[in-house]
Image 1 (cartoon, rainbow, N blue to C red):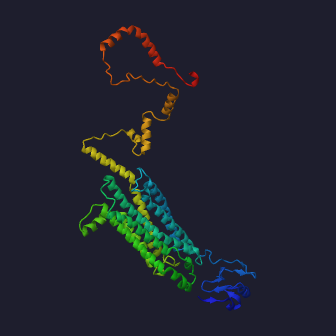
Image 2 (image 1 turned 45 degrees about the vertical axis):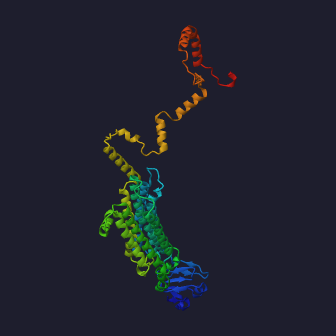
Image 3 (image 1 turned 90 degrees about the horizontal axis):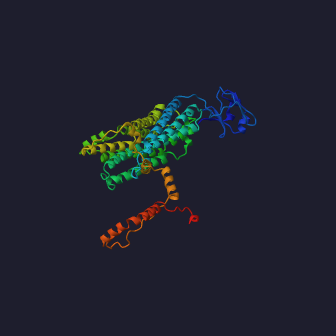
Length: 484
């Protein structure tokens, strides 16, 4: 860098302004002719011809402009950053709607298929959109700053933080699609897929390997000294500090680790098609079957993800297209970095809008299977009236269904109060006397004598029977110990 020391300035003339050479030397100010600034490593001021700052003998500056203040207008990088930030903000609202739709439960949660598994995709989409919005807003200050400061560091930081996030979006979409296919098969026949075997071992190791590569990509790119991207005030600083920081071995290793994670996504999709879709014999037929049964959104998202990974790898070798370069063309940064990411998000949003909730889809398929079984046995399904739809209890839990049945037969709080009142204040029925304490004695030993005694004592026993009946039907009510 070409430095012009203040002692060498003729009569203290710097950019058309006169300064006290003694004062500048006292406070150790140095004039940088390349970017027209005066700096002493703690303060930096612009001394362009259109500015007329003045320094007093005590080192105070009057009418001075800080080097890191916004100076230029918004250019291509900042304008595109605003547009993409708005697009990612729209995707956040759509993601929240899809998260509410697909994350809601209509069936009891199963241990094998957790509800969190279907929500991870939308959580990662919120993370990616947040990173992209912060980076796009920071691009405004990257264009406006005269000397680069924290703004370019924020954009580059969140761009590389977005890369493992967008990989996780595609991975969770593929993984959950395979889990959804497995759930449909198990709902139809719980014993169709064994819990142990080669398939189960693959599904155990694939997520571990993917997140291992994704986290290694994170630790290669994120924990580092980001201050080198500020040193772009001159060509010498760029070649000595900024360029080596952007093309070091850690960025290169992180890019290749991201590619390894992308290969794991392809393997997971092939695994799901192989085990959960009709099998095809032969290599050629298997290849055709893969493209036939794989969802269209994955056939688009996976190549788009490869574009982002390819750009991160290429930028680790070429400083000219690196997102940390303040003069990078917007076509490289936004065309190969942010555009594939926003396409991946919007494709998932559209797919989530068109697909039904999984629990409701399972309920619909169960109803169809039940109707098919009824048709096989000759049972005619009678269409229920319109008012029956609001009274259905298909989505009630076992406790709620039991409570509804109890209410229908007269249960509830009112019946409980009646039972308590009858028990506390009601009459307790007398215990019936045992007719015979000897169950093995013949009860009809002398039927004639019993018959004659019955007719002879009819007249005399009528009064006593009336008295006994009255006494039996109206027992003494004992409410407390004072009545005894």
